[in-house]
Length: 69
Image (cartoon, rainbow, N blue to C red):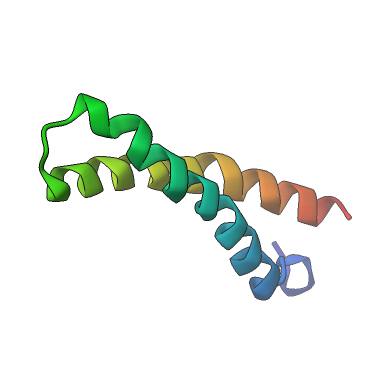
C-alpha cells in the first residue's frame, strides 16, 4: 500500500467509534444472563467478543470501502 493509498486516520477513528458504540451498548447485556455475577468476567468476555468483531470484520470492510474510492 503506497503512502497515498492509506485511509485517513481520523476517518478510521470515527468509524471505529461508530462501530464500538452499539457493540459496547448491547453485547454486555446480551451475555450477562449467561455469566456469573462477576463484573471482571463480564468485561473480559465482552472484550473478547468485541475486539475480534472490530479487528477482523468491521475495520477490514471499512478499509476496503475507503480504498475503493
